[in-house]
Every structure is written in C-alpha cells, then in structure tokens.
Image (cartoon, rainbow, N blue to C red; front, side, top):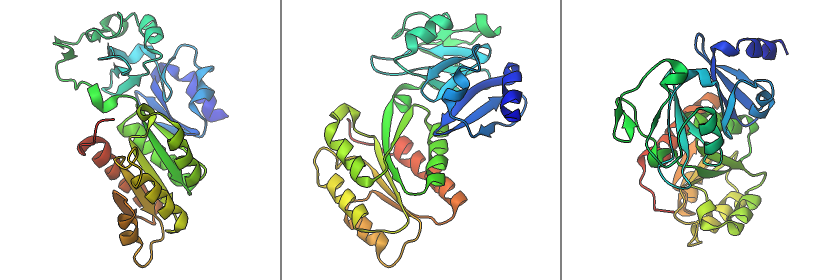
Length: 275
C-alpha cells in the first residue's frame, strides 16, 4: 500500500502507466520504470489528472509532446511523449482524448501540442521530422493465446505491450475454448497471431494445430508453439501439424528473450497475408 501511495504522490514525475494483464508498468521522468502488481484499472480513479487513452495506457498530459490523428477509419491515433515514447490512442477514445488535449478532428494531419508542453515540433507532410509514423504497424490487432504457465503469460504480455501497445491479447483457459472462439468471430476479428505455450506436446496441442491449419479461414495465421520440456521428435511433429515457429525454452528469463524475438519477427519483419 505504501508503494501505491508513493506513486500517487509522485504524479508530477510520472509520464504514463502501461497495463500488462494484472500488472502495471509505471514510467517516470527521473527514475527507472516500476512494475506494480495492480491492474491498470486500479489507477484510473486514483489519478484524475491523467487520461485513459487506450485499454493498456494512461498518460499524464503534461508530458505529451504531440499527437497524430488516425490515418484512416478504424485505425488508432497516437501520442508521443516528451521522452520519445509513442503510445496508441484507441479509435473509440480518440474524440474524447482529442478534446482533452485540444486536438482537431481525426483523419487529418498530425497535431502539434506545444501549448501543453512548451515545446514545438517541425512538421513534415503528415508526420514530424525525426519521428516515425505509426501507420499499419500499430493498427489495432488481436492475438489469441493459450498459455499453461501463468508467470509466462504475464511476461509475454509485457513483451508484447512494449513492442506493440496496440496489440490486444486475448487469453483462453483451454486450447478448445480458443478454437471455439475462432469459429464464432468474423474475419476482421480473427487474430493476427496465435501463441500456444505448453509443458509437453500432447494430443490436445496437435489437435488444435491441425484444426487451425486445415481450415481455410485460419491457416494463414502465424501459429507459434512454446514448449517447456520437449522430448523426442516433438519439434518435428509440431511442424508437421502446421506450426509456423516452434521454440523450446525451459528457463523463465530465456522465455522472455525468445518471446521478444518471436514477436519482432512475426509482428514486424514477416510479410503476412491481408486480413
């Protein structure tokens, strides 16, 4: 409780808070970020001066450098903080956030917020000099995940949130519930990537893989398998069933690094079919 009180009393040096499952990363201007075992929603009512801009992000508007309006319908906007961090603004929240930050209507040019921070940014076309545009890389997308290890699911959420805050992870208690959900959603709501984390390779995992890869609606979705305790020909069997990547990683911290590299590849470098 003392830790929470210290966070609330130090709002002046907090730039933003980023949610990761039931945990929250608190980012400061003058010290390393802090991981707190409270969900992001816990802080929303405690920090009235801050603004909820996305399901995973709350910002301190004092540290907003500029914003970028959505480039098209159904795409998120973004804000760039004074420390250079770029954070997504949910398309459903854009109008409300834009009003709070005194931004113009969406789907237009990028917006300078020098009036809020006392800083100005040179504008070049629809972006800003020295700053990357978000475009497709941070559009709102979904990832489906079934992970047997709870600690790894939290770590995985942190990795994804750091690399692509606009990515929403939907966790499932069983692999059967994951595939069941896939049959009920429309194509636009299908996941960009599927992650299956298991201790051992069994029939349940293989049946899930075959279900995904034999269905014409789902077979194009990158499906990644993490195995904690591989044995025999597990890797070969998973690839034969249609897995796109198989990672054998028993160590907890090693899993974090492997997850980072896998996400960088499939969400950044790999060219995927259009939705």
